[in-house]
Amino acid sequence: MRRQIVAANWKMNLTLQEGEVLVKEICGGMPALAPHNTVVIAPPFTHIAMVSAGIAGKEQVASGAQNCHHEAAGAYTGEVSAAMLNSAGVAYVIIGHSERRQYCGETDAMLAEKVNLALANGLEVIFCCGEPLEVRDEQTQNQYVEAQLKAGLYHLTAEQMKHVVIAYEPIWAIGTGRTASTEQAQDMHAHIRQTLNAAYGDATATATPILYGGSCKPSNAAELFGCADVDGGLIGGASLKAAEFLGIISAMVGK
Ligand code: PGA
Image (cartoon, rainbow, N blue to C red):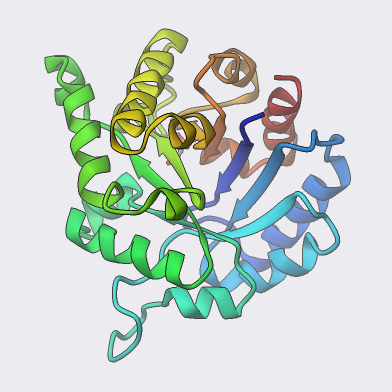
């Protein structure tokens, strides 16, 4: 059975103290997870140690980071490396989020370097892709997303791909309250799986989890996760409230 993952992306939200309360509430209310379920919590860097302590002993709950730098080490003031994340006990790192592509000028070449460093340092990668609204309006989203995956990810070997999760996040659905329909999500996820098949063959295509992200909430999670090729979600706004995040986790458990 393919891995199913619900990952919280806190973005630049919550103080350490607020985060601590949230982690307690999430862990306290966590439903029994199926063996192939994982919950990831990706707070700001300053909160990672707190999250790791809060989830200690919960085998299927892992800590994540929202980014790592594309160089291994050096004079990059304010940056955090993949090796540092590994040394801090981080299990997952989100790479290529549209907000970082857009606001921090992250290029495909930089993302490919980040992916390489993350894997070399023992991290699991959550690689984000997704088209802006104008691309969706032109109906060229399949080519757009395929190009992102080829440029940032598909240089990896099939062995390395075992440590990669793909997150499809249409930019027009992120933080907008406008969710992709189940048909739009399923169509794109099936397309992504096809590109995996073409690049790596059936085993990798079948095993790679593909998460949906973009205004996912308890009220639409079950329907989205019910799609054959949707293997969980990357959750922004709704991961900041325990009841909402727990509702989304329950939708994964119920799939
Ligand atoms: P959202 O964000 O759930 O607030 O739309 C998702 C994401 O950007 O990962």
